[in-house]
Structure formats: C-alpha cells, structure tokens
Image (cartoon, rainbow, N blue to C red; front, side, top):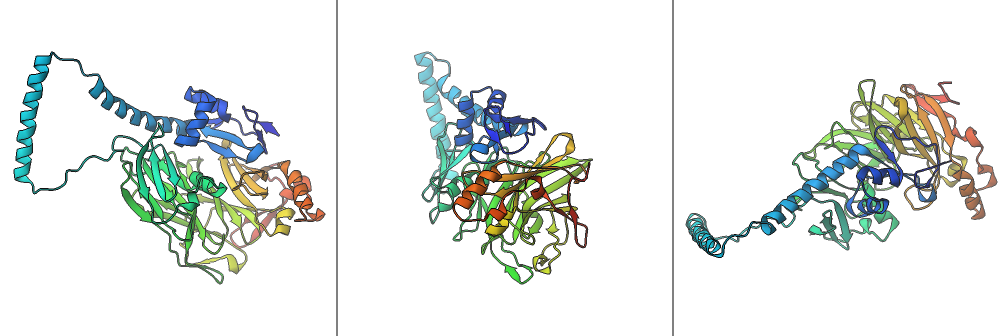
Length: 461
C-alpha cells in the first residue's frame, strides 16, 4: 500500500511523477502556486482537470502539468478580456469639465448622424446586443432542474439553457448525477475558434442526444448514435451515452471521443471519435461496457488503447489499435462477434480474468484506467470487486505491460479481503469466493487471430 502526498491511500503501487504527472493535492496546488483548498475549490467549481484513481479511502488524486497549464491559459485569457474592458471604463484619465462637455456634444452629434444614416439604409428591426457571455469563457457547468448554466471563473452565470424535461441524469444531489458531471460533460476549444465550447451528453432513456454549445450559449449541434449492428442474435438499435473522453490526445486537443452502450443493458458498447464538425472519424464496437481509453506514442507510433468489460468471458478487455480505433472486438464465441460493424480489428487484444466473487454475483470485471507509466510501460487497472462508479471502495487488480504489450507484472489490492467479508456477512457470496492472492490474476487471455492463448504468469521474467 502507498500514500499520496496528502496521505490518501492508494489501492495499488504508486506510479510516481511521469509524463508531467503531479501526484496529490500538494503537488497540484504547488504547480498552480495556490493553496490546497483553492485548488480543490477550482476543481469542484471550475472544472480544474484533476483525475482520480480508486474511490473512497483508497482514492489517489493526480493531474498532468500540460492539462493544468492549458486550463490556466483559458481562464487567464477570459480574465484578461474582462480586465481590459474594466480598465477602459474605470481607468480613463480625467479631462477638464469644458473639454468633456464639447467632446460629449460632438459625440452626440456623430451618434445622431450615424443613427439617421442607419435608419435610411435599414428597415426597422429590433436592435441586437452581444450575448452576456460573449467576452467570458465557460469554466464550469451547473444543472438545476431542467436548466443547464455555464459559469465563469468567478462562478457567475454566463448563459443558461432550459431543456424540455428535467436533467435528472445530471442531478447534483445523486451519486449518478455527480458522476455524469465528470464523465459526460466537457469544456474546451473543440472547434479551434479560440473560445471554449460546452458539451453535455445525456444518459437518459428519454433523451439520447449530445448537446454542443458555443461559448456564448448558442447551440452548435446535437448528435446521437443510431446503430444497426448485431452481435450473434442480439440486435443493437439504440445507444445511450456512458462516457465522454476529451483532452486525451496532446497532438489533437480538439478530438472528442464518446462511448455509449445499448439501452437494454451494457452489451454491446461503442466508442466513436468525433471531429470539430461533429463528423465520425472512427468507430469501435466492444462486446462489453467501455470504461477507459488513452492515447500513447510508442516507438514512433500513435496507439489508441480502449479498456472495457468482456462479456464473452466475464473478464475485462484491453484493445490496442495502431492509429484509429476502428472495427470490432474479436471473439471465439460467434454470439459475441459483430455483424454490420466497420471493418477492422485491434492490433492487440487482452482479456483479464474476473474474480470468483464477481463470477458468483454474475458481474463482469472491467478495465477502468489505462495509464502511461515510466519507461514506456502501460499500467492497467481492473475492477475485481465493488463498483467504481459509486462512492465507496472498489478492489482492483493492476497489470503492467511492456512496450510489446506483454505482461510484465500483476498485483492485487488489499481491499478484496474487506469487500469479501462484507459480502459474506450480507450472505451475497460464499466462502468459496475468497481471494487466493496472485493466483487470481491469471490466466490472462491473448487473441492470436483465431483463438485465445492462455498466459499463466508474467511473460517478461
């Protein structure tokens, strides 16, 4: 077990600062040259890009320098614009009273003449004023009832948009609503305009659309996924959004990745990459809920890593693509192969086992975090018990992959024992599901193009 700089316990080995990573609130606050409480308030109210590994008492907080710097730059730009406007109004040098009088009179004459010319050249129509938020940038969002509001750095409302029905999937009083604020809302310059857009993807049976607003609150577009794909005999025709990934590619900060799953359950799931005009750049279908992704550059290649559940085995899957994430996941069982999906397949496809506790409960394991680690290795976190979407404790398995995506190491967190005891006391599982230590980490399955090979331990020792 390890501690973050603020004493928060991690349920896995500490990765250290790499790739510009800052671990814990103290390092994050020091980078911002602010106090810890200020950094925490910025994250809570203004969307400071802070990440979390684990939940509850096992939570580790971290951030990346580049993302923090980009966020500060956006906020500073908005603040400078407001400051310049205030200075022009409040800091103009005083003029003698007579001079001010004649300047005002001359200005009035010019204004009257301009208005007269305008009236002659244009038909009468209501005057248009700039939107209230035209020189202010969204830094956070707020949902109250059926209204979405964009807030600036001072937590003041820039614009508000009412929806036809309640935004209960973003209800801040519920765990799910707070989770959706983090997972299904994004702020950023996704169109290259120099201003921050606001994106809200609904996770509701009543509304399956993603809403895209510009910085002033005008609706840029809406989007939803209406697929026609089949996995075995399961027809997928309706998708509900489950995760929005932004700022994951340093070389293409405007890229938006959005994941969704079938309305009837968590099978199948899809991940799409959207361009600045809302066009679909790539599409990957998984036979299990998609919970994580990352883009890394390794040996001169751009690799897209997608973490998910694997319904075929009940385990958790990692798909690795060279370039775009396009196509569908492989499967030995025809019931989990896709018909109607785009052509393409992962370069590597690994399936990690679920715990015996999960198997007895009928639950899947799931990859929930993919992190670039020191030396070009990849760190994978797999949920083995509990629910990472809810406030509380979740037990995890951690795997380290080398640059060839071979298993270099694996380790279980110690939370499995406490969750096991809790579930046994509630008569949810039997003693037969008790953890066996590292024996529960294997076998890992690797797709060889036709079937799965079994990996019974680290491959690089």
